[in-house]
Image 1: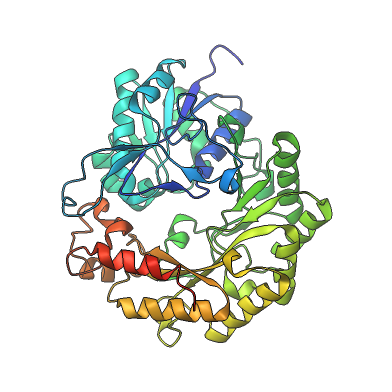
Image 2: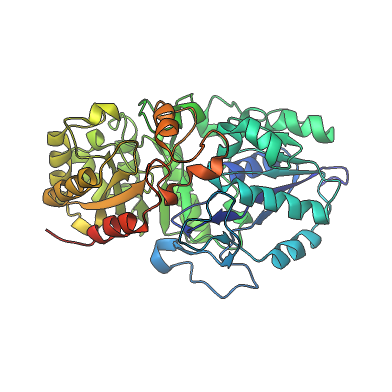
Length: 448
């Protein structure tokens, strides 16, 4: 590395919330940027404030629960306006003292790049930036990610970052490096060719319990509650060969057994995309497992895709159902009919999937939604042979449902993203009811 090569520090910030858990959650975008910067000759460091394998933490088994696990948490005061919520509020991630020690242990960065995830987690972003400034007071800090994209003006005013970037970071990262450090590098790959991108820098982690896979970007659907089209307006698809080669790389070099599909639309155009990927995985004869926490589109499940997923090693299959009120679901999306859902689950069961492997997401807390509607959907899901999984609705700016969410909420959602926290059912007009959430949670474990 040349002495004058800029040092870029990438940070995954803390989470502030009522609850948080590592359900195969990694900052894929940030680690992809790290790989791109390293590929173009820059000196890169990475600190993960959510690191479950920090040397000062209690030892964690990366093989347990398919790589998932709890974050360390420290109780902190609730944000203003949420004091009535009868739950503890915490900072999730490594202790502040450990973070500062990690910062002191590295060379002063020429630029700090930080990601952001859920919009209502921004207080954790803000605290992370403040902690960095205590160690590197003159550092330039640039914030990107989901919060920065969906709530850019709020992030400019409240995050404490020197700059806020919205949209895909790979589109502007080299320009920003030149702007802030003076270092210039010519792009070494075609940004329109998804296969040409370097693998994300998962090796910068202290441990690699699982590897997220992104085989496509963007989604052809326009669901009322989802911001996927806003976050990734351009549809990009990798070749099956490149996906299988990446899987073989992480398995062969690092012994990774658990892989997690982050796609928003994995099974769209399955014959030309997912099917060749699954066939390639089967042909490779690897002892590995696959999980789909982002859910797959039910219409993409056929007798063929069900069999291939089972043979490839899918262990955690999540379906994007959202509601079983099929007579009114056009208010949400047009992704699936009652018969298509029933047939898809039947094919999965015939392929060998057990009920506890097939989870159907059901949205709870939608504007105007009644608990009985959710209970009815849960009953229908069980009757088909799948497992209902409650997903609390998060109001998201730039979605078609946002105006209805704002109108129905007891909070001023447009004033502060912290009020969009799905743990408090923000679109429930009456005061917060922990009993409602507990009741729905209990129902998920009830069998017909």
